[in-house]
Amino acid sequence: MSGPASTEGIPMHTGEQYHAFMLGSQRDRAVRERFQKLALGLMPAGAGLLDFGAGTGIDAKAYAASGHPTFVYEPSEPMRACLARYCRDEIARETVVTLTSPLACKVQAVTADFAVLNHIEDHAALFEELSHVVQAGGFVLASMLNPYYLGDARYDWWRANLVNLVRHGHYAIPSESRIHRFSPGFMARAAAPYFHLERRTPRGWGTVTELYMFLLFRRD
Image 1 (cartoon, one colour):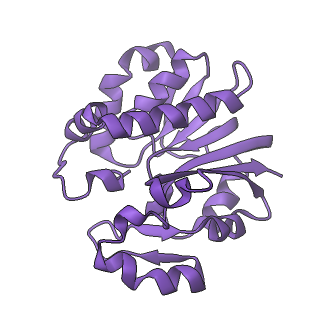
Image 2 (image 1 turned 120 degrees about the vertical axis):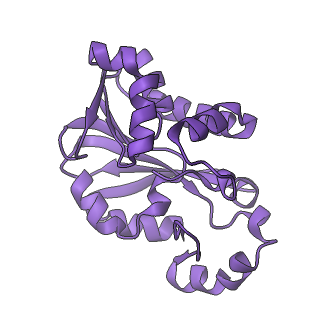
Image 3 (image 1 turned 45 degrees about the vertical axis):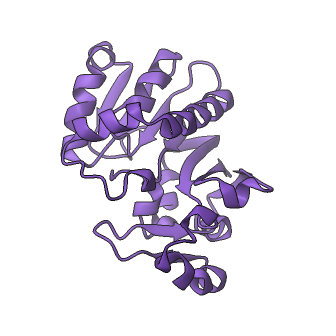
């Protein structure tokens, strides 16, 4: 999947460049650590998961190290190539398993870190597909770009789309990736009837000061 908003404007022509940037960014490492901690805290011991849009395998390696059989789906060939190198040992031990389709597994959880779902427009179809992947009582945990983040208020596109966010719960930014912003309510409606939005973080002041929001959807 394409990189997160924090990398916009930075040329990353290979998975290796993206990988190096993500490991070198203190802010992104802190966000990733919070996401991994939340995901692992929700997982029963030894339960399997699907890392959807796995990028270069940074999260997958951590999940496998914590004893969770980890399936990875990544449509970008440069990212897959980097993942194959970074998770070489885990792939050899089959604690990380690469998939050509996200539907080719049955797991307790699906994780989608660093704005993967912001690159997808039809979330209703996605959640319908994931309902065949996630076991009853399992969950989807997504790290998504926060549409209310005031740090983006300096950009014309953010101010121009406030009305669209209020009226429709989503908007798209004219860019190479045509990345989207979605409100939690919009995502909750897209997830129904297969999943319900169980938790959103941050709340309070963090709603406007944090670049990413974590949405937890529980399988119904």
